[in-house]
Image (cartoon, rainbow, N blue to C red; front, side, top):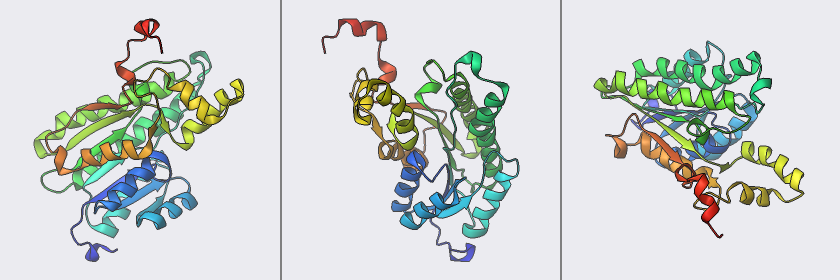
Length: 266
């Protein structure tokens, strides 16, 4: 669809839109009447998802300094407007803190935080009068500490405070900015990580998910579609008075008092 053909439907950019939560969000938005541009590094994956849901694929490495200008320019040329952005692209390097090198820190911070800030900064001037909506996708790791994820956790916690700062600074012109923090969600990334547990314990992958969520109140991992539904709500007019929020979507995991688990009998 060219700029001239845009019928006034809202337009969203979804980074990391080729898999997992990003792809689920793009699909839900498309089904809800949004025009969607999905970004990611793997062109073939993006094109497959785009063909399935009717999105516009943009193959790009968001960590490059020129990427934000390229993406925003391409979306404006095609659709003529931008109403929402989902900052979902991320990488994680699981290492002991003492083994997390400067290069790994830079890689995670550049992709998870700096690139997200760059895209948000580039998009904001192009939001329509009355503002637009930015949704960052972080992780429970932004709210709770664990071993081996210091760099990832720091980058995602930073994303939250960055978006709260945007919410405060740009609220007067109607821009909203919120963060979602998913717990364990069944995606390619989590499956790859949990295969190490499955191999260690010689159990199927599904059993590893069960083990990882045994203390989560809902006793299961989330689905990408469940996270997507909250993101879509935050982009919608239904969330018009919601900004600066950091929202866990974790089956209740962040509410658990781990010391009190000793009293449970099942």
